Length: 116
Image 1 (tube, one colour):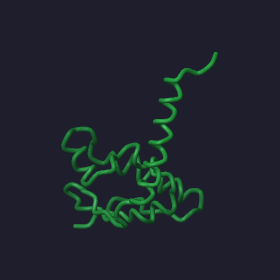
Image 2 (spheres, helix red, strand yellow):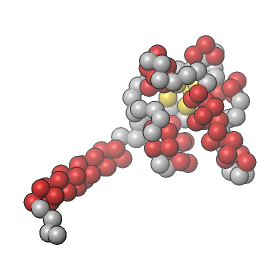
Image 3 (cartoon, rainbow, N blue to C red):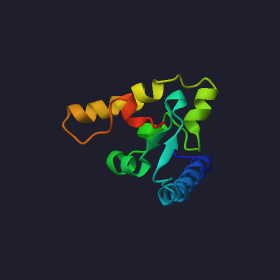
Image 4 (cartoon, rainbow, N blue to C red):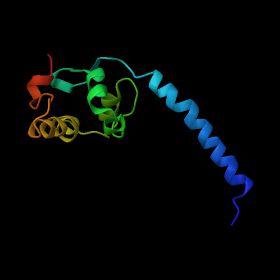
């Protein structure tokens, strides 16, 4: 079966999208430090640049959290994210795995991250 002109048109659009999107994403890595909404326990200073260096794949976190200001606060307000789910299901889980494997790791307790 010979691919149709429509197939090549779609493929061309996809390739152009990739060519222009990937460099734009790399050019805008986001802020080095983010103060994450931490509810009643206080904000969480999040070293975004450190995580980018050690994790490399942005989708590890951004498959859960959109790339926008106050994403966690907005998700909690919309009922899409339960309190403690962020830390227990994402951050602490990863930090504990890194600790267990003997690698440098982030905090594994609530009070280590939250700042009042």
